[in-house]
Image 1 (tube, rainbow over the protein chains, first blue to last red):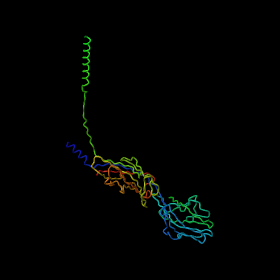
Image 2: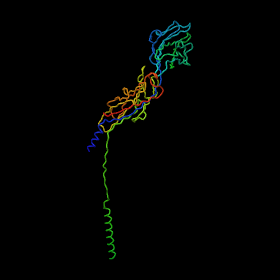
Image 3: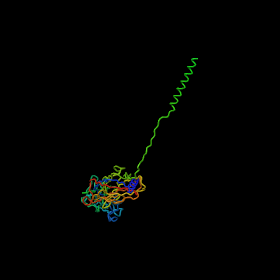
Image 4: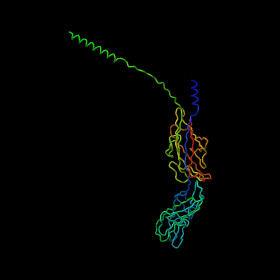
Length: 176
Length: 189
């Protein structure tokens, strides 16, 4: 009887515990990101502010412009007559590409426009004309994490009828 | 006269037969009885199980004490599997998170709550660290919760903090599955 009680007491003396195991599995993948940022000179001539800056989907309003009289409404764009019959409006911004879990030293940058522009209208990045059929290489060895300044240019001949010129420009960064 | 005597004799015989049958019907059936002396030793105990949280990844072997959680492919900027979120991305690292439930059941104890601890079964792989409810895990036991309630699912965040460094430069291996075991212990308070 006493022995039995002692056994019961001994059994209940230790804290009750229960253990379990959770096994975690994952596969890490290399990845890179691209965001557009306002250039530090934003607001001055040639550096219009982006809407939604700091993301990969931004807006850039170049205002209103016309050939006669070199007239343009925006104070942040650069406006110029680049020939006797063509004017150009431009604004610069920054592209930042970041890498993660990658040994890549740098990346190449390309761009493409989404819809064919009207006749006598051209969209360019740093003087490279963009097309709808292929990504046009802008740079071949840009450094990750560095702000790369790019200038968007729209060139319009004076024969182009009045209209809204709108374009979606896709940038593609590819790790080397 | 003789016929009358025969009738009286027959009546007497019938009366005797009736009395005989009536006596047989009144005799008692034999019976037997017994008792069972039963006993049960009710032991106290505590158990732990992992359950899938509706906001987290679907656990393998959910409802058991040996479950699995597969985060799938994780990256700083790429898509993630369902039930996996990426609450933070910095230049140095990023965190991927899932939520899982722990349910502890006790019986026979006066305990109202339990303490939950966890530890890694082995050192964390290079470039990775593991957190449960913001407590960074190591191979030594770490307290996760001190007042867990019994018999209910309690959600816990499981964070994997992944270095953004490249493989060989302090970052994790890329493109191959990495498996880590976390031991959990529930102790009755």
